[in-house]
Length: 312
Length: 90
Image: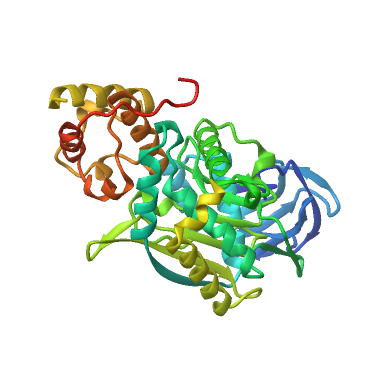
């Protein structure tokens, strides 16, 4: 059985890629996971790998060609075991991935392949913060109610200012540090696939404007109205999808960013409200010491909610 | 507010804000979050509407105690109604 391998989408705005170099030859055996070719996009140069095992039948496109996403680049003769698996897959689950799922799949695979993640967790007591929030909210018009996650986001933005090398990107061996935080927030689209649109210069926003931006992104994510341009330029990501029912969430870093903060579901422990904050970070760029400092900073801001009074 | 009034108002709110959740098919005694997928932004929208239409403010400190819809209905039924402060454009 022959399989035509297409030019993959390596990012949500990728229209085409340049086939820089073939890493396989005709009649060569390849295994699932073997590198097939080097592709250059407008953002980076990436090795693409085979999702199947078999023998290279033909290289359809030449090195140096610019190929549109989805156009065939290589013909693979699947090995017999793979063929049976493919037949079975077609029968039982022959549904192609959605565009967004495909993009997430590609990014997350790249992240786990390239980035040596390390993980930290810190449990933060929320009693003082929630009392402050209840007192604020009960005097506000309902529509101006301030959301707990927004205060978490603001504390994170403040902490990023004080700990270096978390608000940055690492690409092609070069570290870029940013003064402003382009904050990517993990949300769900209408198909319940994650996407992480970005709020540019988020540290400059007060709590109300930040909340408005997050609510707007959430509504547009659910109705499929996020622009491709909003999915790039993030310098740090927060996921609080943990609140959908788990106490801890350990995120996978969105390359070329170097860290992601996970916020779990606020819950009660010994009659106190707590929330587990986790950090996944790139060990090539930073160390646990700085990660720990960052989580402790967030904690200290959340223990002194009066500081948010002037950021409303 | 009596229980039936609360249920009718909640049904209207859910139908408007989360039409994908079949309110009448939910088990009122079972944990709410085990039956439907909601996050803090969904809850925010629901609580804002409860505050606006029923005059009941639900503090964050109570959220953990609302395991089921019955918990929420009982809480709302027991609260005195206060006219909420006017909102933007109201």
